[in-house]
Length: 206
Image 1 (cartoon, rainbow, N blue to C red):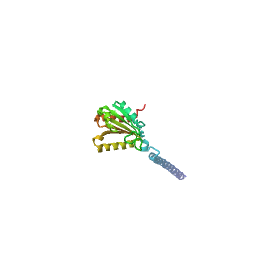
Image 2: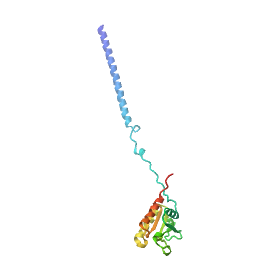
Image 3: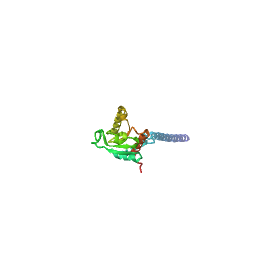
Image 4: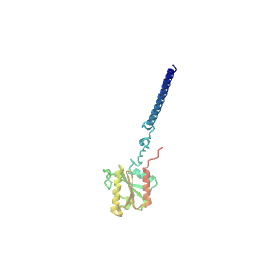
């Protein structure tokens, strides 16, 4: 009888040990599954991945339009004079009076004026040239910067090939070509160029 009870006790003890073992296995499995899930989430694109370059790029600031846009040659001359430069408009050209036959033509200027600067020492009454840049200078305005640049290159080629009589100092800013007399000092022509560049800057935002 006692032997039979010991056998039942041994079976009960074995069953309890087996149950404890199975519980332990289940706990380990759950912990392992949690660990795998944690690793998977940390490397997933929807988790804490590093932001792409596109999401961190600095927005591009649009370029402000030039303050010279839409101005004709006469207005540009007035604005240059307002900076303190001693120029005086002496002729406003039209398609009929333009000596270069470029006024209103494809690629040509849309407005043009001639101005005098007394510092050249040239007497306007004694000048016979139809395009008398030597008395001070001229301003030619084009529809776009590309046309103005083409004109600038043409003027420089003429100056290089024509000798002293065709020498002049030229500046371009956006669609404006500023032609200056060879009789002005370098500091004086540079002052014109600096003023033209300053005129192109848009006014500061309010």
